[in-house]
Length: 198
Image (cartoon, rainbow, N blue to C red; front, side):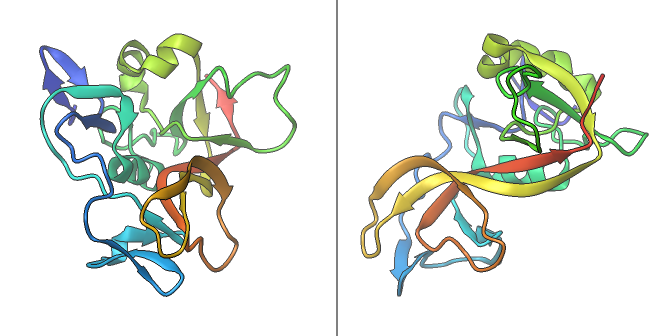
């Protein structure tokens, strides 16, 4: 397992640590009508969204918070939220724990299933269920999926010229083309295709 250990407990890979700088950091600016970083790098903007920068720190694990960069990597590279390794099984399907508040066959609308919860390899499912406060509180169903596609983003909206968020934690569908110039992304929402319960 590639994850860290704290006081004998494995720490899921996507968890933020208390000493991780929590803010987007100094260096945010406006370039015309577009939110940016002064030293913007190619990986800072994906899917038309500028992403929140978390650096890797130390301290105590914050099990209820997520490191934006590692979350984005887990969602796009099919990496396990716990160990950081591949969540793709030998059958080519991606392992997942879907929170029960997202998976309710009786109340779920027909159509695609969207989730902000990252993949989880089969070996790490017991650890995720034990350590993730959200999964512990609502429960989860074990599943595998055939494909994943970026669908939306949770983030903070800014007004042009201001570096204080106007609205926090909005969920906005990703644009088919173009970008979301006033949004700082924090979590990627993906659409799961061909979900099979295990």
